[in-house]
Amino acid sequence: MLDVSLLGTGGMMPLPYRWLTSLMLRYRGKSILIDCGEGTQIALREKGWSPKPIDIICFTHYHADHISGLPGMLLTMGNAERTEPLLLIGPRGLNRVVSSLRIIAPELPFEIRCMEIAESEQVFSFDGFQIKAFKVNHNVVCYGYSMIVERGGRFDRERALEQEIPMKLWNRLQKGETVIQEGRTFTPEMVLGPKRKGLKVTYCTDTRPVESISVNAAGSDLLILEGMYGEPEKLAKAKEHKHMTMYEAAQLARKAQVPELWLTHYSPSLLRPEEYMTEVRKIFPAAVAARDGRTTELRFDEE
Image 1: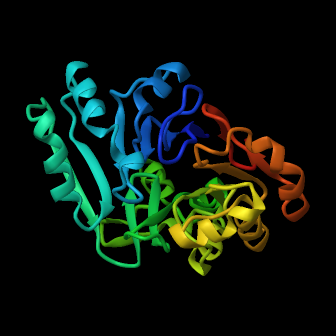
Image 2: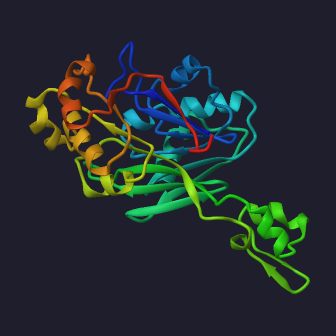
């Protein structure tokens, strides 16, 4: 099961009912935060989740509405007596940006590790899941992210017995390990069926519509895109500042053939995004004007 919570849906500046951009993903005890805008800590509290167990924070880019909440978040983690290392992932310049922000959070009881994205597309692999970063088109270097949970084939007990594979190796093979014992090599393919459908969430804000979004969103169970403007007359403004309208996001979702689209990262002038959804849903019927705290649980097909 993969928990997904859109903590903040605002762009540029927070509003009394809308915090700045952040998304939380939780899978098998791991917590991943994407972006950390102002108000993220409050949004976490409102959700009833704690910042202490966050394992990874990914940044799309370094505009203030996506990273301004980081120093306070680090201090709160430290005050909660966290000692485990924290991994940060982001575009080039991450070390410099974090070092600058830490002027107001200089002493922490845990290590911060920074991994900078060096390519237009880059995959970071962890135990049980991957995070894929892909470059988009904003007025500074900016990336979208997909979290991918792959799922191996079902364990075939009869095949294991027929091949006289020692039972003590079954668990390791089921986890994808290749084991050599007494001169014999045992591979996962010997006991596993074909791969099953996993889980995938794709998240992207602050960009013009580009091919990399629909390509990387393909196969996602949930697509989360910025819908900065709902007013049709603001298309020119979206193009000038390299953002997307709600309609352009819907077109990308339709092209990627995803089952559901959440819109986020609204302009402060867009007070009631739901007023524009009738027209948006003519393009992509499964579109949602998400609000802060919107949450879902994604499950594997057989669950």
